Length: 422
Image (cartoon, rainbow, N blue to C red; front, side):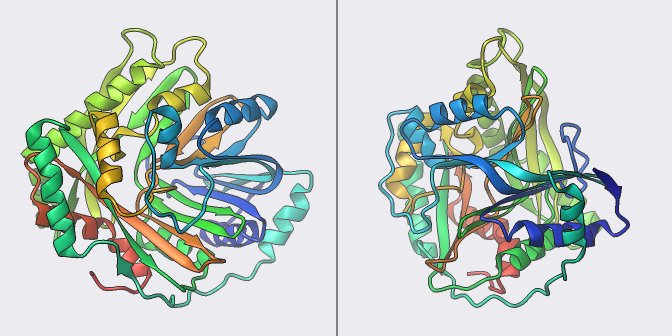
């Protein structure tokens, strides 16, 4: 069933409220960014026909079997800690959120929005549409939280300098070092908080995901990996700059980012890593950099984004293609395994869903997954709220500037939570 809606913003808000009443729900919003690879403006999935839940060990194999049995629409997430299944790695840092490492579900109800056209795919499409239209939009309320950090600023700076010693010794070239901000005994309205975040920081990979009593509220600007026919697309972000106060200042900051030695260096190192990851799934000779050092502007930041593509090798399944590139290079470092191992040593909490990926498989066997950054994670039973931020550490990194970059990346989340810079 396809219908036209006049107030698209209101319909999406009501549809999200409706979806969030189910045990499993996924809301993916491209926020009208001009993305040539996007299949839709918004996808909303709710209710479970069947699902797969897995932890590190055989998670990718379990997903591959589940995908074969369910060739239609699937939505789900990969935890960063699936790295331990792919490589000889481990994660011993504490986890207070308790998401599984992998979860996917085939939805009972699916809504696809393109422009003002709303397509409802369900055994009760008319009933679903009427139920959504009858929803009363809820008002945003202030959140009641007391935000803390796993690192003081002094701890963070000292740790970055220790990491730089590893770079000087040649153990690694670049790494992504992450820190967690958290709140115990916190209470938020997940739907209202996400809607506020998506308004303050609209991004091409805005995501609300509900798994039982756990929530993912995501304002990610980054694509991990997409498949379009036989083409794989990865768009790593490396390089961040603040927005200016005037148009002139904004342009000057963009120009500085475009010519910044450290930002260019970290971007090209990760592009090389992504190119290498894609060779495991690519037809020989087809890996290429479609765009290098592209500058893209978002509400809070300018980002340097590169686009790496390849032609998918025959016999490589979509799940294998994802496994072959996971976790994404922009959140690991180079050499990849050494950087991941080292960050487990220096970080103080398990990344979990952060640095993982959320997205979908479509009936034509395409897929699209984001990188889980700029994201609030919430366990409503334990009342534990968390978000991580990270930045790339290279030989040229200044520890204090990297700390400031972390806070810049957290700006929208801090605003939505009513918190000042820490």
